Every structure is written in C-alpha cells, then in structure tokens.
Image (cartoon, rainbow, N blue to C red; front, side, top):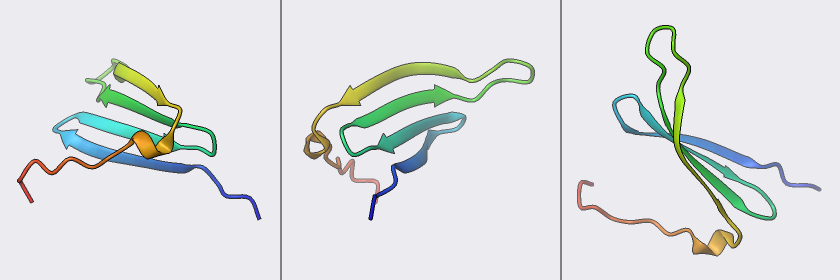
Length: 63
C-alpha cells in the first residue's frame, strides 16, 4: 500500500499561510500571502527539507 503525500495549510497571520507538503523523500514548506483583489498570491519563501525528522514544533506559549 502506497502512502499519499500529506498536504497541510496553516494560517499564521491574517492573509498569510504556511503550506506544508510532506512527501516520502522530503518536506516542502511554502509561505504565502493572499492575493489582493486582482493580484495573485505572493510566495515569500520556499524551503525543501531532506530529512522529515528535521521538523520540530515550537511552543510560543500562546496555547
């Protein structure tokens, strides 16, 4: 049985989203801002992580 890629979108601020794509070989993280009216979304950053174990959760104390 093959495992499908995991896609997750998280809203980190109003109009700003972090998109995660966890694949068998790596993890892709993209930071996007919503498009305004007739403008397309803007990608701020994109990072590919070779080892999925390199991801970790950070507790910022907000709950």
